[in-house]
Image (tube, rainbow, N blue to C red):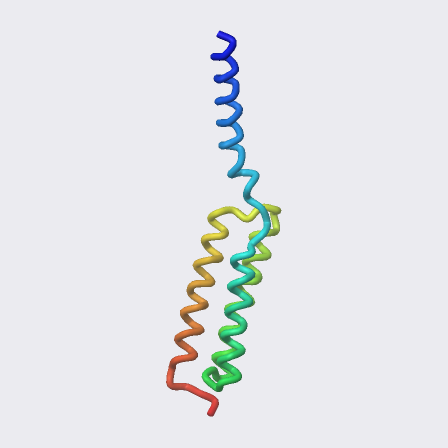
Length: 111
């Protein structure tokens, strides 16, 4: 009987910890978004350097990146970045990545 109550206490403690972790695991850290922003800035800079991006295209891409940065700050404002906010940021990064590719591979160049 004593063993049964110990097992039941252990199981309930484990279940409580398992359900409590996801809520506490959400933080304001967004390392994936920050890493992608840095890589996309490099891609834009390379496009400028190589002449694949015009000034107008570069300005458009930079504005897009600035909006992602503002959205990231807004997501962090309440102290927790939710999974929905992370998904939104990732979708924005995906769209920005496609736009960088499209603009670097179109027929407009600075040369």
